[in-house]
Image 1: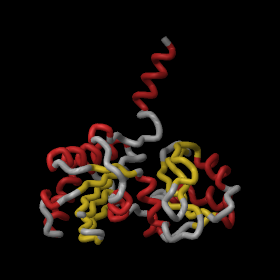
Image 2: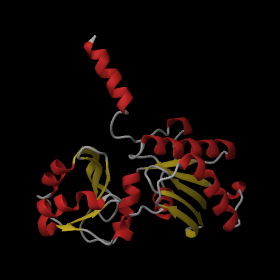
Image 3: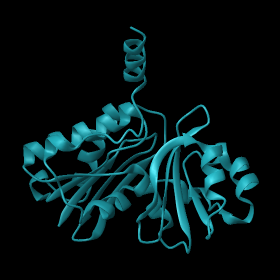
Length: 228
């Protein structure tokens, strides 16, 4: 099976081509630039370098969030458009699950998270088998850490924004917290391909973003309606 994986759900842009279970190529950037103008050129470059044509693809896997609202939409729109044109299945995978794969050899729990501003994070808790132990959620990091400190196993924390929360993690979790080197805090598109290669693909129109919370404009609109 030939898989194209793409992740624009957060600041990191990642594209991978996996041929018959082996990573043929992978492109990752971690810079503040517009994904909307960089994703298709990145896909085109990687496909050429791996001697692939669109007709060679059997499946597309895309990170569906949580993360940047705009970034999530860019990835999903691109993946669904390509899937529709090529008539191949498109699978969405949680961006948190993709990040959790960086810790799949850790003997304990794995806590991936993305910063959601104002002290909030998008997060969840996984085991080594990449199964959710605690459901993905959006809440205050302090409240999440208070919940995790009662864990019966050590917890590996993974996040591109690890430095913003490291002090709180170490203070509340003490010796139960494990924070690896920074290279492991970058979600890899090859892991995204791995995570999605065996997942069942549903109807293309049913693939929607995994925001974990309302878009701010929607929340404000609902608040205004409630006041009337």
